[in-house]
Image (cartoon, rainbow, N blue to C red):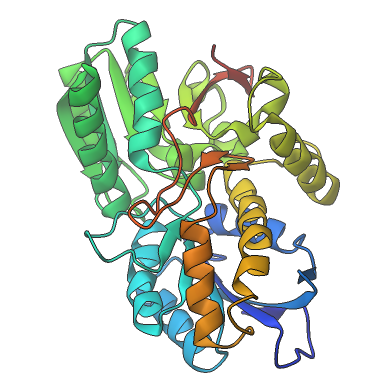
Length: 369
C-alpha cells in the first residue's frame, strides 16, 4: 500500500518515507499516526513535501524491505516509523547504513552507538516508568506483577522498569509472565499471576491488543490494581476492555487529555491544537497518543528543515546530515507530548516530567493529580 500526498515532485522537494503498521496486530498504533500525517502541511520552508507511506504489516522483514526501497529507489530525506518496536529496531539498521534520519514512532531501545541516525518521538519506557513508579509509591504499592509481550517492547519495559524502580525506591517485580503479540489468550499466565496475588500488575501490550491480557486477569479473579503503558493509551483499550478496565491506570503523554491539564503545563496549548485538528478530521473523541506523535513529527521537521536547507538541497547527503545535526542541536522544544531536548548523546529527548497518569472512569480518561 502506498500513498503519495504531493504528486509531481520536483527535484528539490523534500521526500519523506513513512513505514507504519497499517495492517496486522500493530495497526491500532500505525493508523492514527498515518491519520495525522495526512494533515501535515504540504510544504515546509518553501519546499514541497513529497510523502510516501508504506504498510509494514507489523512485520520486521516487511519494514526493512520498505525502508530499503525508500532509501535506494525514492532517495528519501527522512524515514518515519515504524510504530511497532521490533519493526522500528529493524529499520534503524537501514537508516544508519543510508545515513538518513529516522523519526521512530516507537520507544525502541537500540544498543549503544546504533541510534546515530534514529530519534524517538514517543517517550522512552524509562520516562514513562518514572511516572508510573511515582504513582505506585503514592498508593503504597511495594510489589507488582508483570504481564508483557515477549518481544523487544516487553523486554524494554521489564528492564527499564526494574532500573527506574531501583533508582526511585519503587516497587519490586515479584512475578513475571510473558505472551506473544499475536496470542489470543493469556489464561495460563493470568492464573499464575492471580495465584501470586501482587497488589498491582503492570500489563505491557499495545493498541487494541492491550485489552485482552487485562480482561484475562479480571476474568481469572484478579482484584488488585492494573496499570497499562503508553502503548495502550488509545480508545481501543476502553472500547474493547469495557467494564473490565474501569478503575485501571494508563501512563500517557499530555496530548490525550489536555483539557484537564493546568494552564501552566508547557504542552497544553499544542496538545489542545492537536486535539482540535485531529477530531475535526476524524470525529469527537478520536484523539490518541499515536496521532499526537505524527503531529509532533511535523513540529520537529518545521524547526530543523530551515536550518538544514542552509547546508544543502533536499535529496543530497549534505541536507540529510544537516537534518540530523539540526535535531541534535535544536534545543528545548515543546511538543504536544511533552518537552524534548535532543543532543548528540541523547536521541530520546523527553524529560521525566512528561508522563501523565490517566484513570479509566466511566469509560473516559481522568487525569490523576
